[in-house]
Image (cartoon, rainbow, N blue to C red; front, side, top):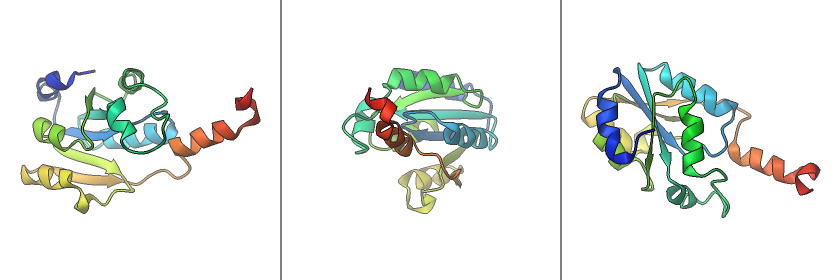
Length: 156
């Protein structure tokens, strides 16, 4: 894990091309693992930027989200074989962090229109690529949380 102030130097030391993705990754599930593995295949290194707890709360996923705090989410993310480096961003988007790190490839999930993201313009301006990876159907943290909460065993 790299503190925000150390991230630029740590990324500079990674094998290129560097792939960058970001998100809350609150409750890791198989869909996340498959997405991150696909992202890693696009380069030699994968940097994952996590929303801080404050940033995640502003996304409006629910008053009790994220369920896992940023330290725990980062520890789980760092344990994944496909992930080379984990860092954080406290802003609403990772635009500032991407500008600092200058990854070779920006990757987002398939629900994003890459042409509409300000991050895409920044990455393309310095010669990088921005790609969307299709989602694997049937995986959603929000759906998983709802399923757990609706389970009779969860009420005990």
